[in-house]
Image 1 (cartoon, rainbow, N blue to C red):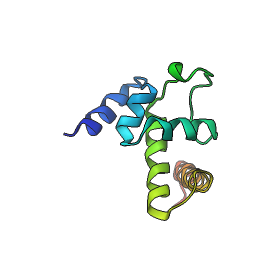
Image 2 (cartoon, helix red, strand yellow; image 1 turned 90 degrees about the horizontal axis):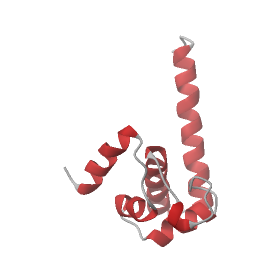
Image 3 (cartoon, helix red, strand yellow; image 1 turned 180 degrees about the horizontal axis):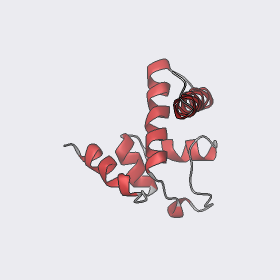
Image 4 (cartoon, helix red, strand yellow; image 1 turned 60 degrees about the vertical axis):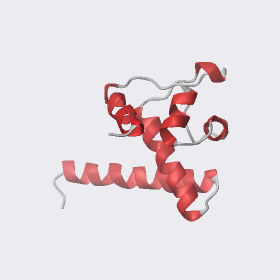
Length: 103
């Protein structure tokens, strides 16, 4: 198991990651994370001070999806965020339909 996989496994219990830990888990520079938090497309738990930012498992998954969209399609952060948001909404709607018994 790689370091990134073990880190993701540890997050299942909602341990919080620091800025540097999230950047490492996504194999990006911390500046990438800072840019996305400041653009409002990635959480930073509402803290103004960068050193106090903490990220949960949902943030890790979102950061990885954002990065994948940006790299695969050469998309800017706003477009990547829109694609990720739409994908999340589709998953929520499908889950809702499944809960209602629709196929």
